Amino acid sequence: MKRTIALGIIGCGAATESFHLPSLKSVRSINVAALSDVDTNKLNRLAEAFGVGNRIPDPQELINNPEIEAVAVCAPSGYHYELGMSALDAGKHLFIEKPVALSPEESEQLIKKAGESSVKAFVGFNLRFHRNVRKAKEVIEMGKLGPVKLVRSVISTNHPSLAEWRKSRRLGGGTILDLGIHHFDLLRYLLNSEAEEVHARSVSGDIEDEASSVSLKMSNGVLSSSVFSFESRHSNEIEIYGDAGTLRISFYDIDGFDMKPVSAAPGGLGSIIGRPFHTVVEITSNASSFRHGGIFKESYYNEWRSFADSVIRDKEVECGLEDGKRALEIALSAVESASTGKPVKL
Image (tube, rainbow, N blue to C red; front, side):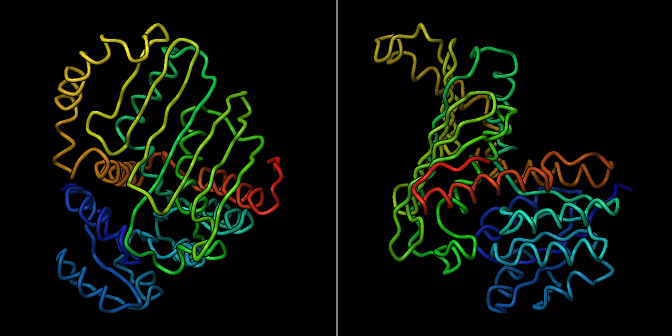
């Protein structure tokens, strides 16, 4: 009989409802055995919608449940460290959303605790598991872009309302900690390099770091420039510039993988004529993603499959607590830079 992981999810917020639970319905090796949230209205509504019978308002009770083998911490960021440590203390495999904690010291404690046992600890940077990111990493490593010189990226959202914790740096909110951390992790992953220096600026109103711009210098000499905003149209893109070609990825668009050689004339007739053909090719090659809600939502399905694979086959996790710590250090340094107006060395 095929092994199935009994998973308990803590936190019934927007990410759990829109991404995690819909994706897990298609992951046959994981059974969502229980949900937990202190807001019983949210808890009951999601449990009903997704057919989860075991509803446990107290997260510690879920963690201590002997029938639960793995715990997913999808609560607000300020609770990640406490709940993550409790799950590891209880000997549970851990899936923890970003940021893993709110300080490097807390993330170090999580790493140390996980290292004391054989449990798997996995960080939910879903963009690593986006099919276009995997293609981009292969392209870069094969040298098709030549040496990478520059990266630029954007994440913007347009939610009618934000949870209060997402408005506060102290609670893990603001665009740098809540949005930008995804792209900081991608830079490390795609470039196989660490950040050396960060310089950031932000504007704040009712929301701290409501919009921000962050410049990084990586250890391999690549420069990156990113902008993040809570109040604009939905966008999530990254462009990579090498001396032999450029690559643009849109994480939301089905045809959002576009690579061009440096010889391609910008605005030329060939590029205009080629767009419909490019779109057809990309839609055809990515059609299977529609089974999992589209090319962006599929990244959550892929990360959950990777988590299950690491537990069942006892494989090294593809995105671990050390990755979570490194991305957090970049984000916190960016927040410091935005506060002081000065560059920060990592």
